Image 1 (cartoon, helix red, strand yellow):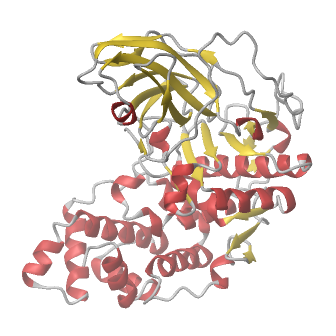
Image 2 (image 1 turned 30 degrees about the horizontal axis):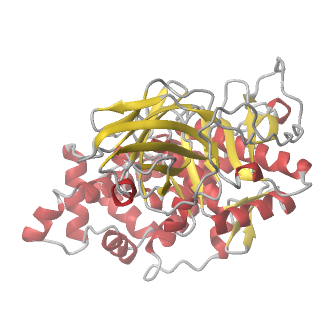
Length: 480
């Protein structure tokens, strides 16, 4: 998938001579010493046989080092009417704030043509790849009258890459004078914080470092790592590493944060990705520094998304309905699934409570907040019937096909119950989102009541979600 970046970038420092030496900033000491071997005891096990996993925190190794603000020349040349790398650029720090630059010359090349150029970059990491398209370069005059330097502001989504520019049509004698990758002016303010496990889920964070809080930072990183491992245990999804990018300029457009695994891996069979806006990052770092034992709603929500949307081999996203209604409770289910996390306080709009009580702090109206209302009811089902039912629900090991006859029959029964008949009903029964919603409710009812028939399904829906709640949910997901 390609992503366009429209933000105007600042000019990079000149970097077209060979980097004989780079400005070095000493790396911060690791929070803990890198592991040379792991303990013989299991990293994850149900050691007290209570149905929840126990994680040996001592086997999570947390390190923190500053990004080294160096650069390197790139071998690039003209191919047809565009500029392309001649070989793969390697040894690139992951999620580094960098500038890919090139000096291009040619007869008929103008600043306007240079400013319209785009850059297609294919990143590689862990045997996977992802592709990005960057636009609106910063353009400045080059070393000759007919040359221009193009600077593309990037955050690297891999540890190696190739690039190709768009066509410089109408330009004759096109040449690539030089090319390089260099650090952005603020790159030395960022750190790579890693929480690594023995064959479990790892966390990689690109973030500013919040001062002298190394002990709290370690607790914070371990907490996120244990949460990811519990999510993996609940869902059956193994991402390997979840990459979290703080101060991501794209996240500002989302106001707060987003999850997009395909930004690290197009096939989504491994690797997760989460981005936080600057405001969200500042809040998160404040918690890391001062309240490392509190789980923020933002990261609970986004990491939980990463273990569902588009993931493989999980089929959850393919047969359940809109994940915004489900992901918060997936996160709460993962927290209760891990004895190390059960006592965590979760922060939701400055309300603090444990996983089983947090929604009771909120007033989620059936009429004004269908998403919050649905999540509240899901959490109540966990408290009433046992969170193990929700674990099975989120693992999604059966009932993938929402188009099977028994689900369509149930969808018809629910439509009748809602007063939807005739052509409106016929249209509704062909709506995939509606069929997924019914399929989701049917599975939940089967897990909680240990049997199924259509009349019981209607009773379950009325008892736990109400007719009004169902109607407002269906309206909110654009089904009705």
